[in-house]
Image 1 (cartoon, rainbow, N blue to C red):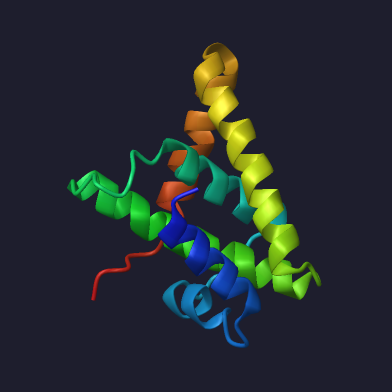
Image 2 (cartoon, one colour):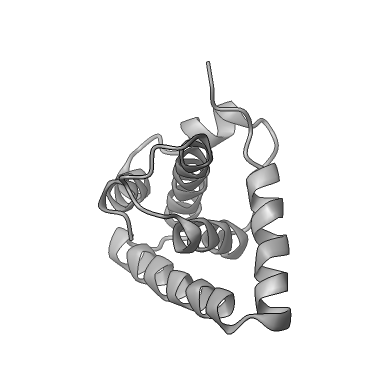
Length: 126
């Protein structure tokens, strides 16, 4: 996992007001922990790396941050520790990477879910 994103995700899980970022940016109710985890994992699994400075990479980073904060908040609400959430993210990311590599229906389904995750991120630009 990208160390910066991982740090932000774990910090969000432990923060007292971690709900503020996703909730303020998107007044809709937060999704389930499983869906937020899936979105976090799909985005992290498809990120190229910290040296990619393209517009697409910036959008992906914003989405990873948004979903990471949502995952952290939902983990906290569910009483999960930041260590447990980090482990969940690692497992889900490995699963997502496997689906992308496997191809076929698994990759097609993962890509559809990824598009939905990206579409659900509110504008984060000021």
